[in-house]
Length: 350
Image 1 (cartoon, rainbow, N blue to C red):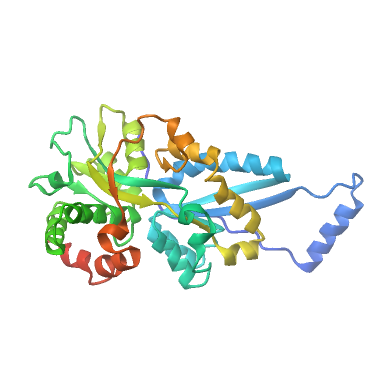
Image 2 (image 1 turned 45 degrees about the vertical axis):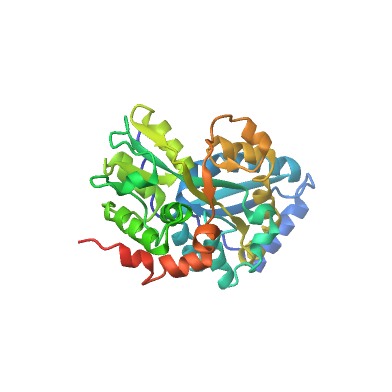
């Protein structure tokens, strides 16, 4: 079985509310109904997310919808939209009416706060700064690991072809970049040494896809590259999809803590009258059922109980944070990923 390309946004236009006359007719029909029962309640949520969370939410959605129906008597339809995290955030800014956003970096949700779609303190509204689960960056290599790739230092060797999504459009790409930067810094290297390391690393990158799933397709379907840098959950899916004989996952000794924040979008849920269900949907991710599903899909859960149900699934890694190695996300964006930043200066193709 092969992974298929996922492009564009899978979102449906919401039904416009009927005219005043239509509402009066509906009210009269309910009043005249011989059973005297109210019309069935229905609600719709749109979850706008990054591209490597697709399969996880495909399983979360029916489980939560069934729970919501049992508790509230309301039928719930949950739609998904996936793409590069930063591109998805910009789509919401441009009018994609997300009820909730489930991203892989806080700056994408901060962007929504800048245009007042939600408050600046959005991260304080749910536990763990609105991060229900985490991940990290690992390596996927070809069968037998012919290039003997084990650590970050192996990625800059001559003749090693590395596939990474574009840090300008992908949270996956940003985390991969900062993981390599942090590897040098945590070993005592200077900024100049880290920049030289990143220059060599991206000198080994043959192509930049806009998102993590696109990078997966480049590596797994098209056979480009010796090693793919990606989130741990995507690496597990690649291994399982292509069988352990075709792809192998290598866990580096050190890597970056990838935090996956979530939020409801105030302006949209107010318009859609979905604030209660949107908040409950995100709170579900913190409960044991949601945490167990996260672990099932190789996201690192916060719950020790969920973690214990998958012994050996998450190898120990020395994890460092964006704050530790790059001063936090705002500084990382300004220094590394803004136009004219370090990434633009080091990534020069002939």
